[in-house]
Length: 561
Image 1 (cartoon, rainbow, N blue to C red):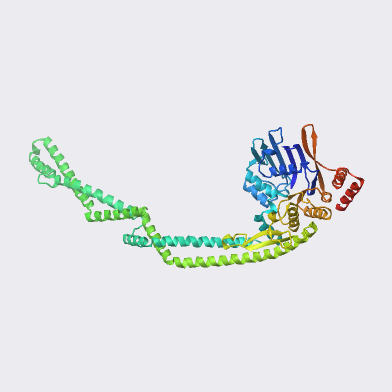
Image 2: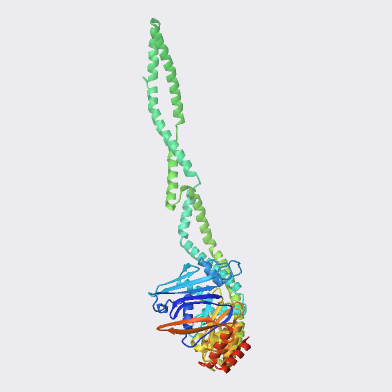
């Protein structure tokens, strides 16, 4: 709900601060006083195109600030702001802060927008503005004139539960996506069947085992070391086994020295050393023979091991995996072949699920469509009852509920909904904004708004000269309906030339234009009860306010009270 509006340097307004209340507020003033300027300023802060022509002559910048009640939790506006990181406590919170929108405009066309002092884009400002205020005038193209919102309005009027349809639609789309994915996977697998069968045959013949490569590599390394040791030992053993090898020469020297050892003590000592050396050489020879036996291996086994390693590693390179992963790869490929073989059965199950979810959606959406059709008939009857007192006796409304092609079905159902009107007997029905004239359009919208009361929409509604071209009983009927509409959480502001409408207002603002030298200014002030009677009397009588006009104004206010 709009709480306050501050305007600086907009066309004829140099500075203006207004406060607003709930209920019906009326704005009056002589023609040309500047009522359209006030609406232009409000439109600017709500996201309308930034027009540098709005900047007051002699200044280089303009600014409009609008203050609103904070959005209630759970509303579309609260969600929209939260999605863009604007957080608010609801109006029920004791320390809740208002939602303040500020829009500045420079003479060079530059424009900036802020929500509670945080910069925001023009696109977001338009979205937020549409949630906050509906402005209905002769050239309005939003609100009830936008067919995109008609379906939601009809659903709210019908108290229709759209959730089951949305849930069924989501299930249907999920089943459709799963079937498409399964078909694509099966087609891809069928293309790979021949390769898979060949690969499985090769891997099964190879029969890879987890950890096998490491064991074979270790065994091969051991055999390769044994081969080298065996070669070196062979060369060493030749020096032991030869006819004149080292051990034989030591024994021959010991025999000779034994005959001479008694001749000198040094010879005896030398013989003792030779005897010890012969014992060590014999022991070394024994160990060499034992080492040679331990290093023995089968060349065929080495060749077999190396061949197995080559096969495993070649297969791993071919499939771009590690050798230890070949066993798992074989299982995966077998599973893919099994899936191909069982794929048709799986597709059949998914097709059955798709058919089931499609039928469930169609059933729920058809049921919702029937609810809409019944509600549309009730709404048409209600609106037409409102049209007669508004001097639109020949006008008719038809809420179109038309089933769309299947490719346009959605979570909201199968219907296209649009409010169509006919203003003359026998005339065809057409879109609301294209058929009605300016005055008729505003009255049509008022009739719709009254019939759709309490069914959602912006909390602040502005009607711009809804009473244009009518008077007397029709103007009184318009005033009655405006007052009825401005109840509960709805705030309604009406720019009017009708004293009958003005008398229905809970608050009354007068817009006036004054000139001082070459400077012209527009001002707005809230009227007291006495000033209000005088303004309504002026509206009744014209330039000269008569006693009769004042008496008539008094009667209008008494009836409105």
